[in-house]
Each structure stands twice: as C-alpha cells, then as structure tokens.
Length: 312
Image (cartoon, rainbow, N blue to C red; front, side, top):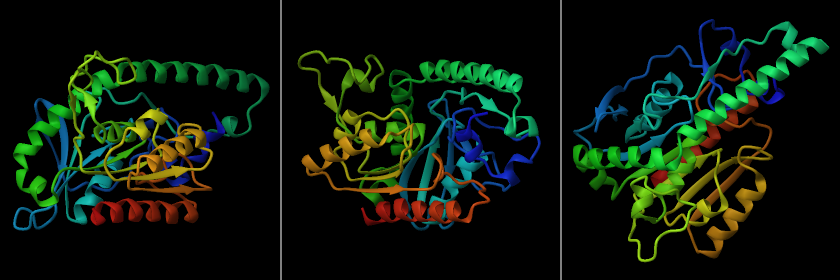
C-alpha cells in the first residue's frame, strides 16, 4: 500500500468494518456514521442530493451546486459536507456526476504485513497497486467532460426552474468542487463552445470556426485540491474563483496551479488562492482525522470557501 494512501486515512475510521472509500488516493475518506439531513431526488432522471436551509422556503437561500470527488452523491461524508453549506444558508444541490458509477472502492484497513512488508509481500502489494491503478484509469476514461458536462447541464436546467427563488436570491448559481468535481466547477465557470457543453467534443480539441459559445453557468466558484486540472482550464475561468490547494500535491501539481494563477492575474480575474502544507490531498472533504493539525486546516479551508461564497 502506498504511503500516500496510508497518510490520508484516520485510524478511527479504518477500524470500521465494512466501510469503503474511493480507490482514488486521498479522494475522500471512509464514511462517518453520522446521519445526513437532506434527501436524494431525481432531476432529468439523475440522482441529486438536496440539502436545504432549515428555514427554507420562508427565507430564500442561495443556490449552491456541490460537485464531489469520486465517492459521489451517495457518500455520507459528501452529504454531510453539503449539509454544512445548507446550515450556512445555501440551498445545496449535489448531482450524481457519474451516472450511478462512482469510483472503484477499496477497503481501508492496514494489516501489520502492509505496515512492515517482507520482500514477497512488497511484490504482492506492487501487483495489487498496478491493478488498482489500471482500474482507476479505466474508471476515469468512462467519466470525461463529454460524459459529465451534459449531466451537469441537465441538472442545472432543472434546478433553475425548481429553485428559481434561490437562483434569484443569489443572482445566479454558486458552485464548489472537491477533487474530481473541482475540474467541472472550472469548466462551468468558463465560456464553452456549444458542442462541448452538449458533450459532442472534448474541451481541449479544436472548435469549428464560428461555433457559438455558452456560459459561464455559475456566478462564483470555489474549489479544493482538484484532480486532472489543466492550466488552460484555470486560465479560462471568467467568474470570481477561490482555490484551496495542497503544497506538492501530485494530483494538482504546483506548476499547474502557479501557471494557472498567473493567467488569472493576467486576465484581471478576481481570485483567492491558499496553499496548505502538511495535509494530504482530500483534506478539505469532511472526514475523521486523528491529526489535530489536519482537522484545524480542514476547518480553515471550509471557512475560506464559505467566506468567499458569502462575499459574492
């Protein structure tokens, strides 16, 4: 088992038998036992977790689109994360970006053999690691912008009608994205050609001359430790954006972030970037950590993202 995998898990969570976590390193942690307060419903036949402010609809909340990591909409941790924003006055919609196909899961218990493996055990673990990596690569190949963007736009179209009061209250749609979902907050924050929005063409490929653009679909965004993010996606953002990152994060490399931020600055985009040290990728997603320093920085990151949304 890779050191990165071990570093992102809390012992008290690992001990819970039967609990599963995303096979993507650091994506989100093992689900906690707490109960969420929202509900799963369907929009355009897509599962969506909806969490509302306690006094809604008597007091209109602002509509917040929350895009998760690979564990998806049915993860208790992700639902509790949505609930935290709802407690702060946002009407949160969290769609199933993966059409019922969340990231492959892996058990999280660490055996003594894995902690101090022999040479034979190291070989076995190496083979398992290669197999796991292949499985994740296959999963990622099934969930590209061509597949995910049409799902998101179908949900956005429905909730804009269902919760028109919340959209009006906030002057548009807010969005937060964690891990896998961060990339799509950036894409929703950009002007995209119509064929990209409809899933007919990948964003990085050449557009036909004269292709009409749409967007952005959100008025303000905040992302935390994104994955598969490119410099061009950061550079293409055209709404205020908050970025929470982890120093020396292989899934969101420093050079990508730095070049992307340079482009934001050059474009005169309102943005805020905070890089956290001494925390694993995925730290900002709700989960149990034994390390109090990580717990504290998790609270700080939530406060930063929440404050950004409320300020806009």
